[in-house]
Amino acid sequence: MASKDESSGAREPQGERWVERWILPALRDTALLPVVLVVAGHVVAFTAPMLIFALRDRKVGAQLALLGLLALTIGCTRFEIRTRGRPGLLSGWVGGTWLAALATAWVCHRYALF
Image (cartoon, rainbow, N blue to C red):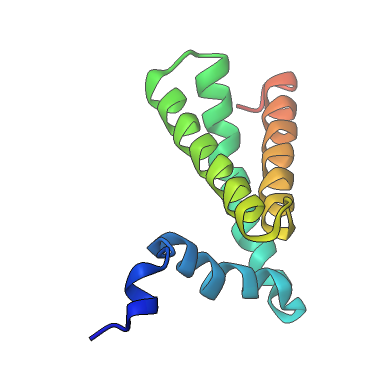
């Protein structure tokens, strides 16, 4: 049975506990930097074509996928502002991934690679 303090206090959402336990330690540990870079590269490889499909070709499915990614980005930033009072490491990685995806999409569109 939960104590009175545990049941009356504000509960942390399940997603926030997951981010604190699995995502943030991976970003902080320098030994896992190659893994983080590979995951970020995969996200860029997924996001760049979605940007091209959504903006150039006006595909609704790609626009919905980008809307979902934007919602996740806002959720990450809100999480860090709520827990730390400012955007932090997670927001930096997510923002960097968006910038890399935008640059990749621009190069692919500019040089007709995709």
